[in-house]
Length: 267
Image 1: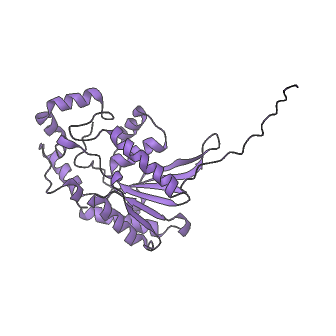
Image 2: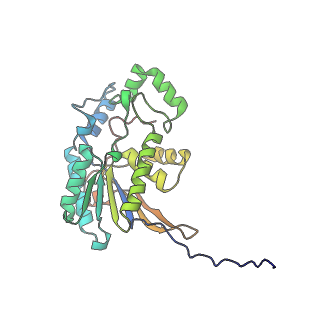
Image 3: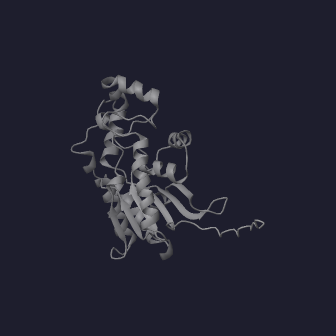
């Protein structure tokens, strides 16, 4: 019997479940941002902050920035407003989230408000709260090793590399895509977290994400916006629409601040 071959009918393209949108917000200016700026300008080796980094609050300006972003969200159409909010457990991020929700008039009974420890700040270990000058003076071997390895792969003693952060964020992104399909998700976190989300969602490489990092710091209370769409092959994908969007602050007349967090050592 002759073998008869049949051409299979092409299957319709399908997309995995996905949220309608993922918006990323860096927390408002913190007391740590202010202290870091003062230490750098004063040529000091250490950043003067009392207590744990996790407990550092917003500055008065940071509170106003958070409220301004909330008022901007309040003016959006209902179908554009977040339905899910995920926040880092750090005080500066949680305060930003709470102020944002209060001013946006989002219904807390309907809003999924989740504190997720995987969104915490990058951990800097032994180098925490040292300025660049302080690291060069106190940890010259680490400064040399970081220069040789590069900031993407360098892991300070007791801390994390960018790759370590990306590893924990992979599970967050998987959780968002599966748990919150069809939802509008707002994430409130930190500068490195925003950049590492971009690395994952846009499928970037080390060179490209570090180039983005060098261009400018992620502004406090800036919005980075991804919306569900399709790639060139028609596959469902989150597409970048805005990065470092600060119009809500500018419209409110609030200063736009870009200071790195206290533990962040800039190249």
